[in-house]
Length: 238
Length: 164
Image 1 (cartoon, chains in turn yellow, brown):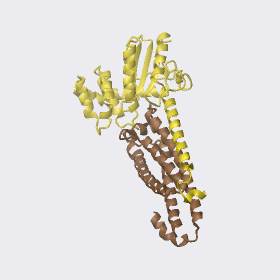
Image 2 (cartoon, helix red, strand yellow; image 1 turned 90 degrees about the horizontal axis):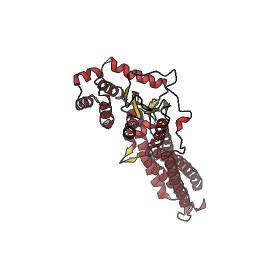
Image 3 (cartoon, rainbow over the protein chains, first blue to last red; image 1 turned 90 degrees about the vertical axis):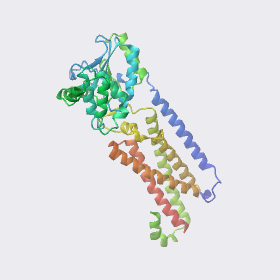
Image 4 (cartoon, chains in turn red, yellow; image 1 turned 30 degrees about the vertical axis):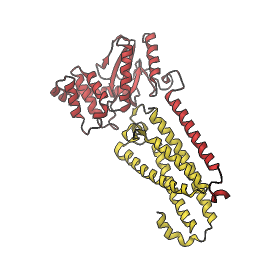
């Protein structure tokens, strides 16, 4: 430490700093790579995170009929528990759209379940009601599209209802009826039933995806999801 | 704060030898360097979480995904955590250089830590009152920065005494 009075004498500090810089960048790059591409080629849900929900007697059925698109005889059913205000759900939305387009309604049936998280999203409940109200006029998926594609806009608004009314008009709903349905006990109970189904299946966050009753780990990649769907198609949904 | 202390402790300063003060200063900067390494690792982890989009779920138990996916986690299109990583690296570098007697590093260190302190106060405010969600890794970083601030204040006070 005698050298400390005369700066510039030792290269040691720069060696230390350089070393840390290299470790930081190297470690960061490694972490980033492993984060992007999970090491295990097989889907995680095979282990602890999976639940064979549909066969479980404790699972509640949820709202009836569910919001679903695709053939009832499709070998693969993808059930999403979602919150319209949740950004990761918004990110999953285009991914799911792509899956639907790639597999088609005969192979992939998509079910949406309401799982609003009002403690962290202040408009979660009201947006769920908006989708249900559209559903009463047979336009659930149109409203679902609007809510997800425009999530960034309405979720930041102090009162998103004005946006929801615009969407209702855009998709050709009977607006007064839409407004009335949004506040109806029927909309409320549908949301509640879906949420209770989620709870009974052990859902704690959104989006939570089930493929043929099997819960996917949140970090499941698109590739892993496709592998699961492919496997489901191959086995005919068994 | 160091100005206040200066007035109180200045009469005693003559009793302490320069090397004593230096040794303690070195110890403080060593602690600062170690802490900043922890902060650096934490900030890198958060940056990766942010970039890799690992905040893949909104959960009933609110936490990092909420905080990281919020608009407050980005500044000028950069993940805030990456700026944090840069700041911690600067703190580490300055602390190492300060240990080796570079006085300009000491000044830069004080400035950077002061800025980090202010940023930390803002981010704590955002988590507590705007998002109403706390991220454990962000809180760890806040704890480190607050400790660093204390260390820098102490080191500055020692330095003031030493030069008298």
